[in-house]
Length: 257
Image (tube, rainbow, N blue to C red; front, side):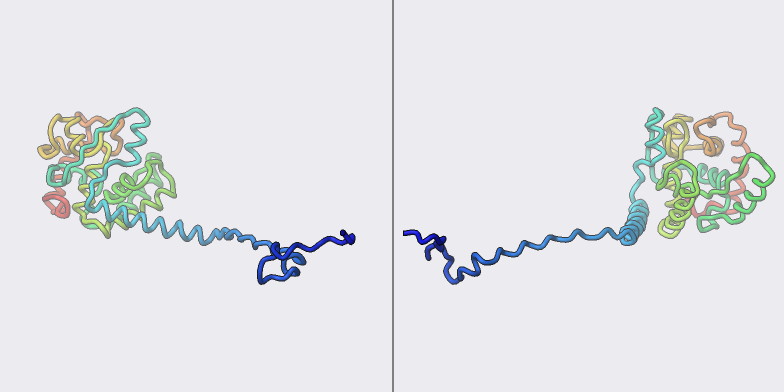
């Protein structure tokens, strides 16, 4: 008969080895929640910086040997509807006439400086103070760093990265390699990039057989290849004469064969 009290569970309901008090007098403690890791901005920024240096050094090291397949400028021009004609050839298949012509036109001290021509920079600063049309002083090394690794738009941020990449390629590549990458990456017309594509586009033959006059005409369009034409360019005769001086003074020995 029931005596009005709640019966305790039968022995078979009790886990062997545990008392009733353990089972019924106290609920088990809740599992502790895992705490989320705190966001550490300085550690994140540090990781980004380390990652950038690792990526930049690795990419420069790779392109010391591997041809540059495409650049950001090429992608931009394709998106603008200009097309893409880019034909990579080794330096041995590019006429020394073109190498001398671009040295005469763009960077007469290419074989002498370590990426930056301080004399040209000083001259450009003095000239720009008294003239509305500004004159640049970027070396072939700087132009190569910009063309291959950076975006085309001008800004102080890009200029800072340009200095950094110029330092890298000057210390990790030979001058001959810098010239080879430069001549294979520069814009030489609407959708036309590199010496081989430029030579075929303007003269209908290989860059290996460029004459002095043709090389000077190609070098003459480099400041503004989207607007200027190689044939009939007034700058070409002066560049051809300066290229002769470059050869005579041995200013092309680091790049010409």
